[in-house]
Image (cartoon, rainbow, N blue to C red; front, side, top):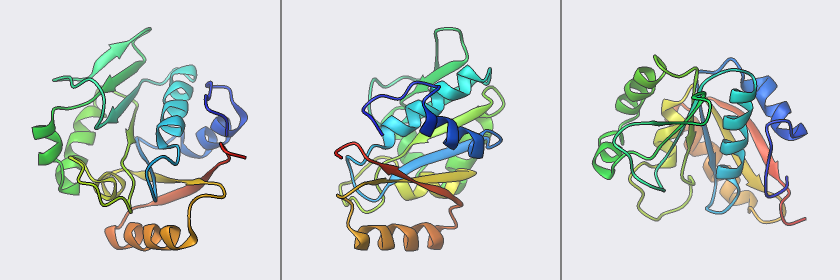
Length: 173
């Protein structure tokens, strides 16, 4: 994958075909820096290109009290305040928030933190994966250790996350 994905990029198109009916998708990785934001933003743009409204939710960026609609109104972005993210640490509570957002948006895409990353995050990646209807696991080609993938897969299974696929990010090759 390259450093930027337009809505019509072949890899994003392939992901879209498999996920277009999902109401919520968590995009996560085993470790930080593997390209989750790249994939999440590509899917977000692709949803709008298909005429579906999409909300991109993440835990870093400019904090906003509510989702902001962008451009033609099909795209929205939201970085909730830390207190709200902390309240969503339970997958059931985050699932409720996603269901509420789904009343206004066709798709909610969670740009989720890494699963194996031990740094404290307001909203853990595993929580986002467990709350979403589908999860994508991003792998950085030639960089992600097999042990991190095994640990991530075991954590996703234990949390009851629905793994829709693994995305190979070939950014460095």
